[in-house]
Amino acid sequence: MSPPVGVSLSEASGADASGAAANSSGRFKANKPAGAIRIHNPSESEKYYVSQAHPNRRLLAEPQPAHKGPNHKDHGAFTPDSAVRAMTTSPIHQAKLRQGHDLQLQGRLGEAADIYRAVLAEDPKNAPALHLLGVLVMQADQIEPGLELVRQALAIMPSFAPAQESLGKGLEQLGRKQEALAAFDRLVKLAPGHPGGYAHRGRVLESLVCYSDALKDFDKALSLKSDPTLLLNRGAVLLQLQRQKDALVSFEKAIAGGLQHPVGYFNRGVALTALGRPQDALASYDEALLRQPDYTDALVNRGLVLESLERLEEALASYDRALDANPEMPEAKSNRIALLARMGRREEPLAESNQAITQEPATPWRITIAPPC
Image (cartoon, rainbow, N blue to C red; front, side, top):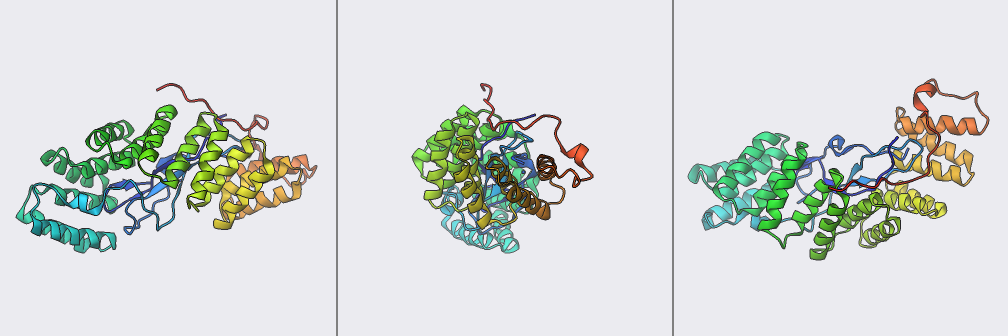
């Protein structure tokens, strides 16, 4: 049985218009980033997910991503102008690429692609055009062909930091984490003042269970630019390191900084639960549910907190709500069966009880300690 984990930041599925593609996929459980819900919103300059913490009876280890709202911008992203400008690009081509980039941000991908191809017809070695076309292709879910265009841009201009960032993000999208890590290492060397390089590398390090190193990168990114989503990631890593009080401070700062995504309140609830503050945890889960009423992970965790407070009928109702939203959710099924048995209502077992109930008894909330990297 694996323990619960904290919530942190990473790329969502789909590509942005200045970087590469990304991915989403919870009784307090968490799924791998590769299962992320796919979104396509070219109006965002960056899309991140926040990894999710899950202390529940049936403890599973990996962080679960959940997407930020559609109007979020990554404060660490390169500006559109930096993705267009380069020493080899003429002013006329720069103007055309800015026009294409604006169209790409509006979701008019075909028109943008036509502009990029027209520039490349006149200047086949135009690195910014190759990069932007590669990002557009990745945005259309063709990651490998898009990466090839980005690599061509880097072959022409190895110091082109926006292309290096897109390369890392595309590799991360494909699950090639070590290659992505190497790409972000190069990005940090190329642009040491760019917070996105540290943020991206921190997410990859977190996914590789290198929590101490990930924390250093999130702290470095935050020293360069304040970002509530990075605070949320930082808190998730702190939970992994069993620093629950510090994690709670990070979550509180993220929320105070304007983060309204339900996962922020969910993670705060996890930290409060681990700190033995069930009433506060319950309020935090309720805040998450105000923002996403069908948030099954929050409903399940809420049910467990209600059980700890001996509010059993309310706990049962919370599990039932989770099952209404996802009838196949094993954590909700197993929790409901265990609660009915506790209430002496054994006449209401589910048919799947033998498969749904874990063989181990309920385990106290705890966080794994990461091995050294």
